[in-house]
Image 1 (cartoon, rainbow, N blue to C red):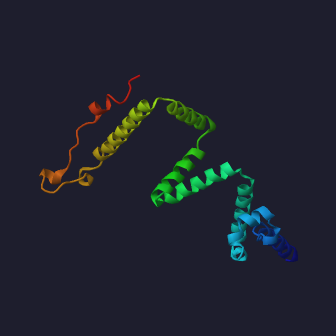
Image 2: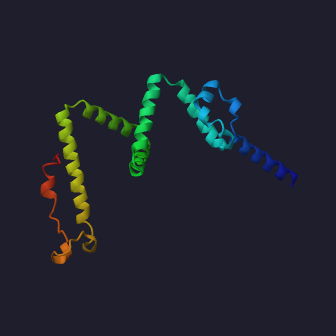
Image 3: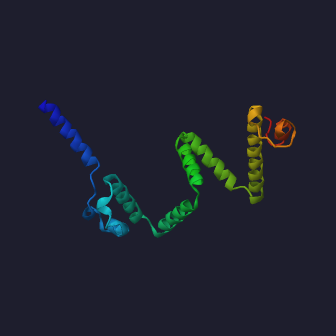
Length: 177
């Protein structure tokens, strides 16, 4: 019983060390300078939060003025996004992180090739992409059961759109190999 208790105490002490608070005085002067607005509330923050802030302050202190300006611009842009846009951005980030190195490389090469195109070609490709997205949405609507299809009151059959086949519309957009 004493060995079990001792083992439990050792494990518990390890857990508390992992989540131990970061003492304000243990921060470097540069970290303290960055985190100065939080000094009064520092002791009330969780140890994990303090650790994260300390690491962020160390990174910030190591940045060049140019890097800091760019980081500030990204933060300002992020703050202007709606919650839905932020969620979509995080989902795309997670999708990118889940890609294999080869998939990431191919995506980066595609982006680089696109950015080297003349602006007129970029605009044309964007427009075609938007058209393809709209067609995909229409295809998804066509696949809905009739009771779920969009309806318009006052039209026969409740205004079920009865969308035509999209194959003829897709043919000019999808290259045949």
